[in-house]
Image (cartoon, rainbow, N blue to C red; front, side, top):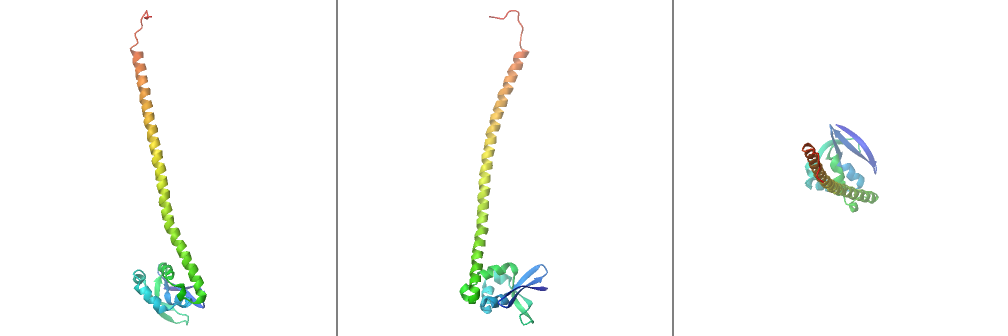
Amino acid sequence: MNEILIKRVNETGITIIQDGNDIFVPVRPICNALGVDFSTQRKRIMSDPILGSVVGEKPTTANDGKNYMMVCLPFEFVFGWLFTINPDKVKSEAAEAVIRYKRECYHALFAHFVKRFRHAQECNEQEIALLSQISELKDTLLANKNELKAAQERLARMRTERLTFQPSLFDEV
């Protein structure tokens, strides 16, 4: 297990814990940095059907330098948890940062889901264009088949006339 300091916020060290390929983030230091009540956040995390299923405890070094078992979330879930924090409940100096963060999350969610919609729309437009192209090619193919058939019939008539040609000394006038 490897603990890495990633940032200092309001004199609180925010760390990640690498455990093999997994990365966890202790919750208490973030709560301390934001000035929100840890026990309230812990209860909210535990009662959340998603966060509660992934939360765990890991040995972590606190600001006092001692090791404690701390409530941790997998790194990928921290951003969603932070999104649930009410800016009215944080330290006044952190409120604007929380509002900016939440606004950025709204933009990221919009971009993610609109991107899917736009991609589906682009695929639909490409499919319509390809179907139109296929239809035109089929029409062209049918016209070419008809022209080919007509040319083959003319050739057959010409060969037949040539092979059945009977010379005569006197053409009828």
